[in-house]
Amino acid sequence: MSQQKPLTFGELNVGDRFIGRPRDGDDAGHCGLRGGSFLFEKISMEFRNSDMTTVENARRLYDGNTSNMPLGMPVYKILT
Picture 1: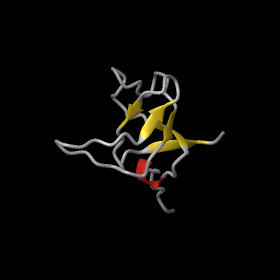
Picture 2: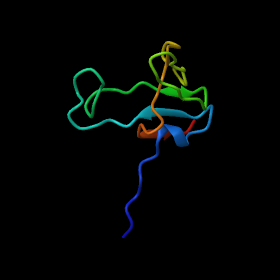
Picture 3: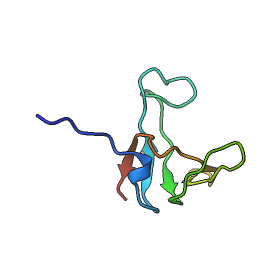
Picture 4: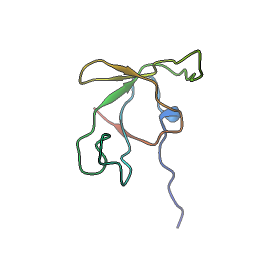
């Protein structure tokens, strides 16, 4: 039996909607396995995160706030 690999943010296309995959033990502050999850949309293929530059590559649909998501972050793609 082969093991499946989780989908990562870097594999999504611009316009794809997703939630960050909850991790066990992350119930305080990031919703974890017992809280709700915010729905995001990927808005850019770019990723830069250094002392000088951060690129907003995702938008939270709840309020329009933008974020910088790491390419390797496990996600669940949401089909609409």
